[in-house]
Every structure is written in structure tokens, then in C-alpha cells.
Image (cartoon, rainbow, N blue to C red):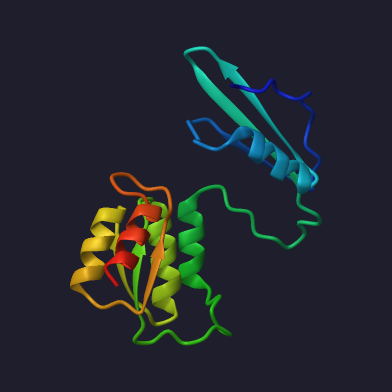
Length: 163
């Protein structure tokens, strides 16, 4: 079921406008409710056979001095030049298994954890994560819940059942 779009309006300068023009897999009703709880709105425009465009508008407050990124590559570049972890605990020697199918997320998570001193190993789906967790020792496993082949829920249940 596709909900009809709400009346479109021009976002104010202090709002963030996000358009998603691919299949999202999000529960539209839940997402719209969350947007409204944040004081914003979510609308959708659909063209049969042509896809859908989802627009999220959320008040962001004063953006003076806030760096705005247009592409994930800019965030990764910024992470490389700034130390956002100055006050963080040192993760030196901590082995982290990250089960994540998004290459962009892997890169961001890898940069942040490596800067804190962690040794990071990636698995692109739950099945690979289970195999790695059973063959190597990890202090922490970070599990994405929505992955191909085996999702994070099933992988976590399997790991817990095997001790």
C-alpha cells in the first residue's frame, strides 16, 4: 500500500531535505510517524513502473557552523583529517567483528574503530559472521540486522545457541 503524498511545501533554510529514489524497504507508515514525532513530515510520489521518490523534511535547528556533507566520500575524507575520538576510550587490542553488508558503512565503521585502536574484521552477511565468530576470537560482535543470505537475527540466535 502506498500512502498518498502530503501537500508539498518548500523546506525552510533550517530544514534538511532528503530524497530517496530507490527501493527502501522501510515501513512507510512507521517512518512517517517517526518523522511527525520529530516535527517533520514524510511524503512519497510514485509512478507506476517508474519507482518512488520519498521526501523527508525534519527541522534541524540552527545550522550555523555545521558542516554539511553531500556524499559519503566527503564524510570518510573528513574522518581522516579530524580526530573525533579524542575523549573516547582506547580500544587498543580489542578485536571487533562487524557484520555489515553496506560497503559505505563498513568503511565508516572501520575508520572510527581503527582510529580508536580496535582490530576490525568484516563479514558481509550473517552466515560469514557466524563462520568467522566460530573460527576466531572476538571481544565484540556488531551485527547488522538486515543482511542478505542470513540476517542478523538468525545469525545471533545461531551464535547464542552454540555458546
